[in-house]
Length: 128
Image (cartoon, rainbow, N blue to C red; front, side, top):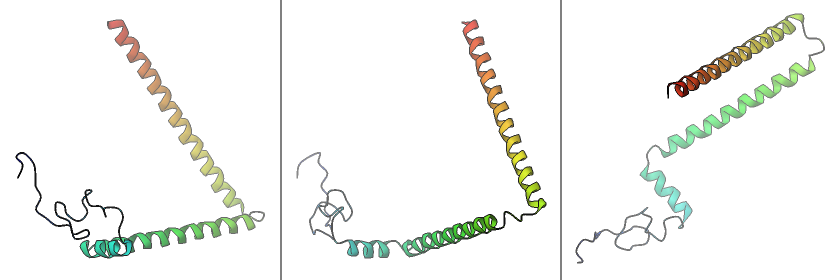
């Protein structure tokens, strides 16, 4: 055995070679190999695999349902827009006013930050 060299006495399950484990980058089947066998192996090694996959699928279905509902609502609004009540118009106006107000506040904050930064930089250059 060579000195100063790490020797691994283990056998890979996939390629049946010694010196590395299943899943190591040294294995010639690291990325390749039988994909179905790999999925089966991962599913049995990770007990949460099925639950996580099911949750992702469920979230995807819920998101699709929400988007479909939103699409239906928007198309129904467009159909009835000619006969929309004055209450709907008032709500839209209020919403637009709120959005404009928020934009103005953000712009004021940005201006204050710019002024604050400018005054800080001028003070630091004066002190030097």
